[in-house]
Image (tube, rainbow, N blue to C red; front, side, top):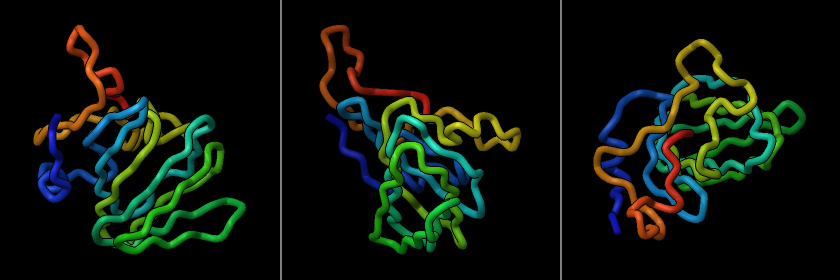
Length: 145
């Protein structure tokens, strides 16, 4: 079992909109991301997505058909599956994301051509994982995001 320190995890990378896998459990991924500026409009047809602002921001989560939700440090929001949204960080925000392993960060928008569609890489400081099978592979780990 690996302990993950959030501060060390965020210190391990600088790239905005490039989430890092911090933990994997029960088919879910816990990712750390630095958000800065506007992301793309997208939805995740089959996945809820949790945004938890740890530091910085505020983070606006804009919706096509609902009022914008504004998150300050210590606040979180779950965007239900299929709801079109766009995160906008007015200043850099350190955010924890929680969603099914394999969820692509740009959702149904796919590759936007601006380098924001990417696979999730693991934190160099280590990843906390759920049960491990007999072959030694983490049952719940997902390396794409």
